[in-house]
Amino acid sequence: MRILFSSLPTHGHTYPLLPLAVAARKAGHEVVYATGADFHPVLTALDIEPVAAGMPISEAFAIASKAAGVTDPRQEGPAAQERVIAGVFGSAMPRRFFADLQDVVTPGSFDLVVHEAGNPGAGLAARRAGIPGVCHGFGRVNASGLGDRIAGALGQFAAEIGQTVPERHANILGNPYLDIYPPSLQGPDFLATGDRVELRPVPFAEPGELPGVVGERDRPLVYLTLGTAFGTADVLSTAIEGLSGLDVRVLVSGGRLVEAAALGQLPENVTAVSWLPQADLLPHLDLIVHHGGSGTTLGALGAGVKQLLTPQGADQFNNAEAVVGGGAALSLQPGELSPQAIADCARKLLEGSEFDAPVRALAQEVAAMPSPEQIAARLPEFAG
Image (cartoon, one colour):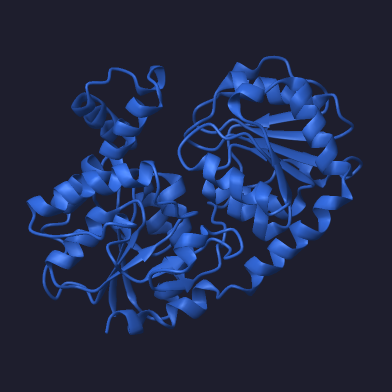
C-alpha cells in the first residue's frame, strides 16, 4: 500500500507517529510523511519520504491571535487563551494543511491517510479525495471545554469546503482512532464511544549520546525537563533549587527554549544539557520531573518511572490529572511551585513505596498494548 502520514510540525505531534510509520515501511508499505520542513531530516534518516505541509506553530498562533483580537495570549485570561488555541487547532492549522495537500492527496494517490489528532486538515484532505483515513492519537482525549471550542472552529471550516465533522471529538473526523493512551487513564466517556484501536506508545528520539552522569549510580537519578514548547529558565531554576538539596543526581534538559547558561551557576549534583535522547534515558531514571506533555508522560509510564508533573499549559493539566489519579505521580499547579514544594514532592515519590505498585501496573498495561508492528500489519484493514 501507499500510505500518507501527517502531523503538525512539532515534536509532541510528530514523534508519537514515527514508530508506526517506521513499522509500516518495514512491513513493505510505501510511506510518505507530510509535515513541516524542520522535521524532514529526521524523516529522511528513517528512509521515509517527506512532503512539506503546514506551518510553524508560532505562525499559527499569530494568525489565531489576530483573528481573536488578542495581542499576547500569555497575558490574557483563560477565555481569551481558549479562543486563540481553538483558532490554532480548529482553523489556522487545518486550513493550511488542507491547502498544502490539495495537489498531494488526490483521488488514487494513496490507499490510506493516517492523520494525528491535532491535524484534522490532513484528514479532511483525504476525505475530499475519497481516501480512507485513520486518526492517530497523541494523548488523552478530552472533548469538553476547549475541545468544544476547537470543534466549533473546525466545523465552520469543514462547512466552507462542503464537509461535516462530528459534534463530539470533531478532530477525529469519525475515523478509526489509534489510541496510544493506557485505557485505565483514558477519558471514560471516550472509552465507551468510537472505533478505538489500542496502540502501544513507543518513545522516539533521534540518536545521541547520554551524559556520563547517567552511569553514576551512587545516588538516585532525577531528570528535569519542561519539553520543547513550554520551558522557562524561571521554572527550571525553581525546580533545580528544590531538587539539588536532596541526596540525588539531577540531570536537566533545557530544550530549545532555555540555554544551559541561562540557569546560572549550578550545584555540584546538577548537570544541564540542551538536548539528549530522552527515549534512551527513561529506563535509567528513578524520578522524572516534567511539564506533563503527552510524549514525556507516556514514555515515563511505559518505562515504569515515577513522575512529578508541573503542568504549564495545553493538554498538560489533563495528563497530570490522569496520572495522579492512577496513583503513579504527584503534581504541582503553577501557583504551587516553589523550591520547597518541589523538594517535598520529589522526596515523597522517591521514598514512598505506595507509588511502586501503581507504577508497575501502568508499565505492564502499556507493555500489553499492541505494538506498532502489530498495528502496521492491520493497516490494510483500514484501507478497505
